Image (cartoon, rainbow, N blue to C red; front, side):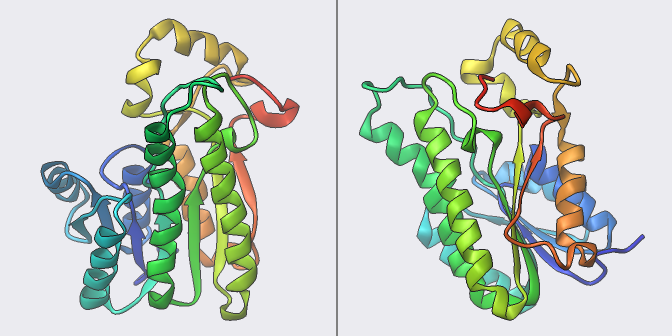
Length: 252
């Protein structure tokens, strides 16, 4: 199948996890894909695995200058963008209310919100009419946990920006949608505060399907939204969590 034949896609944070799985799915559907990452060595490995229809460009999503350079390089290589997946993010530092530091605020919002906003802003001139923009947020945008206020706020802010973008870009038939996964089985969820098997065992008991989703499952949804099959879907938030968010607010 070739749902994305000859499409040019940009996937930020495409070296692992959901970003990598989505880049792989896009290529399988006929797209040429630009992936980004902060480390050149990791980027090179990912591009090697993805094959000849992938291009890697080093960029830090929290740096507006890097994003400007990324957009300029994509323009030089392809001249247009059909699909933009703003995936880079996921910075999560747990600090309770009353103990939140400016450094934590700047770090989390710098990637999850500011980075996502300016990635979109810098690519708007490159988007073809009818393009698809997908922002990766999180169920944390509307579900809450102790110490998670800034992460949740950054994702909620991204949702608000996305809906405004969908409204303002509708004249060009550019679709903007938000995908909100719960914890997804990727290497990143086993680091930091989540580097504990007991935590994961507990969280899975709260999930209706008693497991995490996979990066490939999230990539499948994103690929649908990127395709012409979703041509009348814009301004939507789509959760992918086995129904865990039905009874929000919740604690995951």
